[in-house]
Structures are given as C-alpha cells and as structure tokens.
Length: 343
Image (cartoon, rainbow, N blue to C red; front, side, top):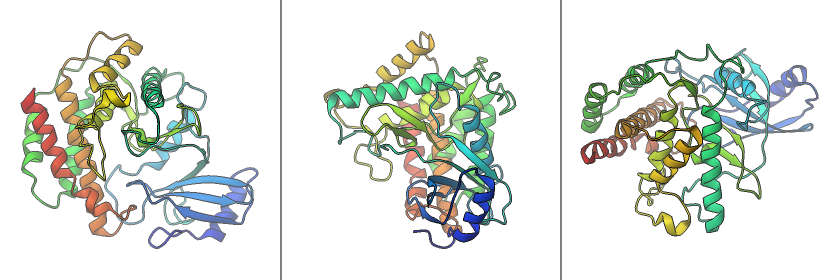
C-alpha cells in the first residue's frame, strides 16, 4: 500500500476521476507498484474496474525529467498502430489534486518477465518471446510519425550529439562520487561519434524486456510501457539499449543479464542473431559503428541509474532499492569501456 511521500488522497482522487473519466466510479484503493525507478505508478482498484496511474515524483526534479505528459501523448498517438499500448483515459496537469501531474490508463492484465533468461518458460516459448520483442521494436521504428501526429515530438537529426549533451548534463547534475570510467567514456564518445545518417524514428528510450507486458498465456506483447524517455531519435539507440542485456552478467540481481549463460541451450538468440533479425525486418544489410551505439547505451543507462541514486539521497526515490541501483553507474561505465577496448 502507498506510503509517504508517495501516498495519495484516495477520496479526493476518486471524486476528481469521477468527473474526468466517463464511467469511473469510486471508491478507490491505490496500491503502489514497488518495481520501477522513475515515475511512481499505482494500481487503482475502483468500483468501475482497475486502472493504472502514473505520476511525477514529488519534490525538486531535474529539468525535462519525469515527463508524464509526453508519455500520455505518445501512447494516445500509438493507439491505432501496430505498436501495442494501453489505452490512456485522462491527463491531469493540476498538481493540486495529488501533489504532481499524473495520467490514468488502462490496466493490462498479463505477464512481465524480469529475468531475461526466462526460467519460467520452455525453450520454444523463450525463442517466441524474443522474436515478438524484436517484431514490436521493428514495428515501433516503422511508425509513420506524420500520420500519428508526432512530427514535433522531438528534433530530427544529430540525435546522438544532442543525447550525449543531455545525459552528460543530467549525470553531472546528479553526480555524487567520481567514477573514472564514466569520465573516460564521456571523453571517448564525442570523439568517436558516427556521422548523422539521417535516420529518424520514434524511439522508446527504455526498450527492454521488463517494460513489455506479455499475454497471459501466449508469447505475444500486449503493451509496451514506460514511455517517459521516448522521443524522435535514432532507431539504433533502442536496439543497442536492449542489447546491453546480453552483456550484463547473468548473476546480476538488480540488473540481470545474459552474460555467461548458454543462450543457445535456452533457445535465446545471441545479440548478433537478434540484431540480424531486426535488420531483416527493417530491410537493412548491417549496422556499422555498433561498438559506439552499444557503449553509448551503457553511458546513458549509467547516467539514468546515477539519477536514481541521487533521488534516493534526496528522499524522492520511487523504488526502495534506489540507493543500490545508483551504485550500478560505476560497473555500467566500466562495461562500456571494456566494449570499446575489445573493439
């Protein structure tokens, strides 16, 4: 159940939603999800059914972070596309209702897989899960941005240059200790940035296994969630970000990966096979500069978890293990430098 500083005034929220969402009926009970690091998320049990609420965290926040209004907009835009999303019902920009901006969406009952080795599935189902994950990613990068009204959802061109500037700034703003590998990485990346190839797609920004809800019994994605970092960007950013999971150690508790695991025996494709399948779906021959894209993804993720750790120190973290998550910035940066050195 929700507790301060993320507790909700349930009677007031129920009264507000009754007037804002057709068919909504209270009373309601709000149960905060303990997983997730950024925007506090709640399961709302109401007389009219279950809903999900996503809000900005309370307290002082980094500029441009926790953009729940952008999440609401992109999910609404994708409603009739091949990208599965939950239906969104209402965006409340009045912070006085619960203390911060929030939106309410459909509750999707299904499965979330937290361990990329998928120990709960058999070999055939594991292969099917990874293939559908790949299919949905290709569908996302094939969305007609103009047709869904998202041409102004980000600035096209120079994606990596802008993203590096943003995340370097975010990292410095939340830096709590000196991480030598992170400083090395922030010198290497701008010096080895590939030329802009003109590719622009709707990028999720946090596309990974545990941000997908699968059908209760089928290896099929029924909703992509957590769109906070979405923007118009380079499609290879999502692909490389997801492929980090192949390099993270399989023994990792907070960020379990596929490193050191016999993936072929499990029915899970290698990262090279996964990339090849994506290229086939997108009509590509290959992806040059792959080491850069992968290293950049580690850098960006390290900056994100550093922000989680800083919010924990400030008392604004959504996840009870946020301090531990923040400590992952160092090993993530070190993994990126190892990839660069191996290349």
